[in-house]
Image (cartoon, rainbow, N blue to C red; front, side, top):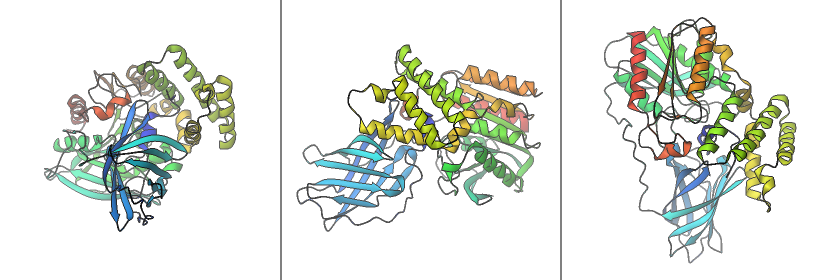
Length: 480
């Protein structure tokens, strides 16, 4: 079983990165005479921790030359053009995505109507079999709102220096001015709807609140969707700066009551919202949805424990993973040089007998994946996350705070974090603190069985109604 090195949500959200959806498609070489890859193909890529990522390939043949596009439905990406699609003399197809540093190489089995091959990305190689399809049928998402809406939807842009944040402002019916909220994403490369596994939680939340008379601003995270900026160089501080500019933007709008603006942050957004609140005396309230309050390294260690236990690992193996993780974080926090940090982590993993050193046979794909993981571990965002202690900032937050968690959240433990949130806020003199533990809900606030990330995609529900009502009722009590 692959051991957890980094945040599951972070890895999945950034799996394909921000691939341009309109890159030119190069013409392919002449196809093998006995094969034809033209048509629609779909398969599932195993990305770790029991999770699978559906992919759909559309190959088109014109005069013995191929073009193609790819859909990643769970990530909300459609029509991503392959830069080249070639078929060599042996009949093997190669499709490349240069911007994502990815490619697929496979061989057609005409009888089985499958393409058996390998997905390669950033040094990692994963098996992938694509089957002929009459048309991709997406998962059921009954809560996703569909137009026409009973409120105004406006595309907006928020400037933060040389970064342009593209978003949507939803405004209730009526004359206003209305109370309003800014939605702040979790970790990873998210669009304005915080799309994950075809769920659009921020779209559902925005629709619900706007129908209750609360305006909502949601935007593509910097470097994602239609927003500009370098996401790879950004940390939570940069995302806090973006959120603050979104707050300032709302204050310029005549439809918005500038004295009744708040923020709702999910996961990492629950860390970012207090950063803004500590600097803004006029922020009316914040909602922390599964917001972590312990230092990042402690959060990740808790995730290792919960995820591996949920997957049935023996405690001896879990303790081994925890020991490796603890030393990894200690090295990253003490070593400023990326190259030196990676070198020391590799030496430590060899000393402690990490999985790659237990295998009798050298696994090139596993080594490549480890290299990719190590690059993430020394990234600016990761370095900041594992060292930052949110409790220090929470002591400076004096506006009303609602902190909610699902009791089956395996990424941010509800009891531990809610207790620490209340303690930090009250230590700073904040007396308006509400904590709510929602039974049966996971990190995405879905009604679930185990709370493990592997369930996220298979659950039809995007956000449990009781979570939506808890947030809506509490905001109403503060603004109306």
